[in-house]
Length: 316
Image (cartoon, rainbow, N blue to C red; front, side):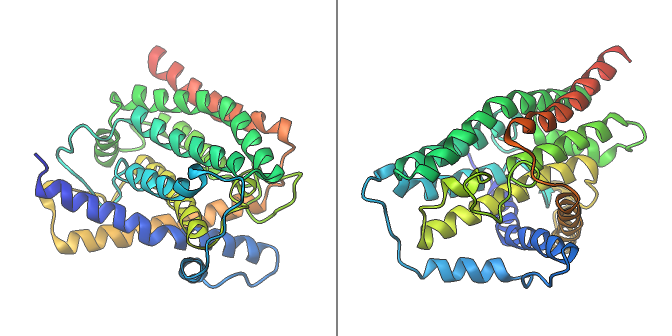
């Protein structure tokens, strides 16, 4: 039976991530623009873009099928479901077993699979190229992500994300220094999974460099709005996971659930997420786009830190 606490958690957690994810994405763009000597977009620009796209006509390729029509809705549903796995406001006492990090990774992989199919479905050479590159990168990055998840489970003694964040919220980072190593891996996974520089350049449509943008190039109107919003939510979910592991203060327990506590937790997540978005923007501004066949080098850094964490925990 679904409890009132579970319903409240779904509404608040998913709602906060949906609400703030466009802001975090715009902050990254703003920081990058400032580092390049430009003013950059207004902080609420992505909200304006989404509202504008929702009112525009949807155009489909003549070769497209139901895949292209359903993928935006499926991707949005997948990302909202993934948002339920990462608590950013409060940690529910029980939520029907949801929270397993392996299931969380499978859900995100399903969203990636649907986007890749949609890129092929449009019949565009750019979409096919982007899907091919995405699947090539996924074949390399997914084993690395599994090792990162294994490192988290080894350090915190559980596969449940709720329990992970519960443990980090009461533990001192000085007593669990291996969390710093995992945080490096998680940050790199965040950059890779959200198609940021140096893996991909979300600001370009050059055929030699684009990966994610190539797959959604044929979308328009409300479908494009859903694809853009789902991408922003994906970034916010990974940011929430990194914040929950490294700086979980402010996330409250269900037992102390009060309206002032929820507001304070939401404000703290906004502040921490904004700081992390600035860090992402600075990181991207300090890097250049890597050559496609050099990208696995970045994956190996995340793999190395995670494997090192497991070795330290097992043999220390």
